[in-house]
Every structure is written in C-alpha cells, then in structure tokens.
Length: 197
Image (cartoon, rainbow, N blue to C red; front, side):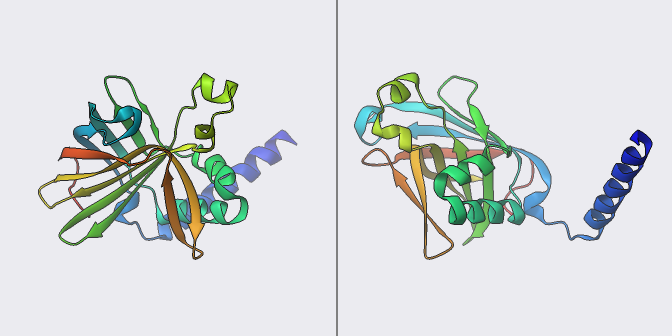
C-alpha cells in the first residue's frame, strides 16, 4: 500500500513537472534579488512629520496566477478570504524603521510609461491593544505600498501601514487607508537584479 502511494505521488510529480516545462516563463515570475531603499515620510495622524528608513527586498514577483487567486478570493469571501490566500504567499520582505520587517506576501510588477509600477500587499501585524480593545483599526488587516521607478531605478511612491481592500467593478482593487493620508515614499533607489520588465 505504501509503495503504491509513493509510486502514485512520483507519477503525479512527473506530470506536474512536465506541465511546468511546457508553460511559458514570464519575467514577473522569475526569481531575482532586488533591493529598493528610501525613506517613509508621514503626512498626517500619529505618523505625521516623522521619517523612517524604508526597504523592500524582492525575492520574486508574484505571478499572474497568484494575482488571479487573490482576486478570486476577494470576490468569493471578501478581505478575510483574500488574507487567508495571501498568508500562504512569500515574495520578499518589507522593512520600515530599523527592524527585521515582515513578509511581503505579494509583489506585483507592471510596466508604466518609461518605468515600472510595483504594488506590495502584505499581512500586517495586529497589535495586542487593537485586539484587546476592539479597535476599528483591527479591520484594516493589510499593509500596502505602491512604488513608481524610472528606467534608472529611482522613484517615489505611497505607503499605507493599515489598509482595507475591497473589490470594485469585478476586478479593481480599492484600497482604503485607516489614516487620513497615506505616507510618502521618497528617494527610492533600486539595487541588484534586473531593472524594470
């Protein structure tokens, strides 16, 4: 019985491997190492007026299939289902301040004008007091960053440390910030790997 199960698994793995070889490889799904650094500047709220170091480590870009899975999850079960699917992804690491940061679950790259637009979506850490006191911020389960880099790898963007995601018009993600204004990402520079797409 054990041998038949192992043989069945080996056959299934060979089939999956064969299918993978026949699929076209896209640049967005290739493994690469990129390091994007800069500064987060708070515009309003508790973070207003403060600036902290920002770093995004890209191990790989999320594939079109990953994005479709997230979109389907958001359609079928809202942001709770999307969070469940997202928590099983790992595309890199995002760091704000001088700490080890958190897993950047999805990193989506797309050409825009003469540069690249990068969207980062991750499961944020919920603080104990948010859960204990039922804070409204507990409903804002995601962290979100949107980065624009030119051909030379320089750019800027926006950063939302506590976000809520909804679906609009069937396939458009609407990101709502818990704060009044999203923070700004300034002086971004990309190092390593291939630039753009």
